Length: 293
Image: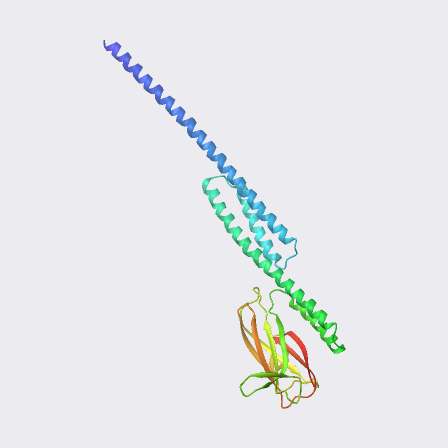
């Protein structure tokens, strides 16, 4: 009886052990398949990130072929993308690695969008300057021999000002004026009636320029080639000295800023052609003429 009971117990234990082994085997197979599927998914996500990084590189290559003036910044950003791509190639495809590189990819995309917007703004500003230069050229072609000389200087000036980071200015108007009792100004072309010369110009918007207080100097030369009124002088770091009539401090914030400058003479104005210059520091931004009869 005892032997029979022992055999039954062994049979029961054998059955239980067999069931446990089968369950463990099934769980192991299921776990292995899940790990395998998860690893395949991670490898797929890694490949997708690598593909998207290559697309970012291709976008930079397209913009760089345009010969943009911010090539160095674009090359630097492109190099960061390439470095991230090469690092990812050597990394094991784990969930943490994939998540980390997805975040880095998003960061690089946002940086690229900012750089591309800056590049587009620079292209638009360059096109605007080019159009302004063309319009100036057409007007100067119809001018006198003296204005032809001014034209040559303006060409050289426009070439220097084409650098996107420099502040530029455009002339609005220049005229001789009389100040009425009510404070208003009336324009005149008569030398004997003129009391002041009014120079109106606009400091151009430029998002790449440095903001801050900028000194602008107005210089007016009479028909005899001498500066009218009582000129003052200022020296610059490059060793040059400028004689000027008025100085205006512009609180430049990278947007258009209008300046209205009034220049007094040393008495009555003489008939003839007056030359007007506007400088930002030592740089000549505007040159024009005014004739009084």
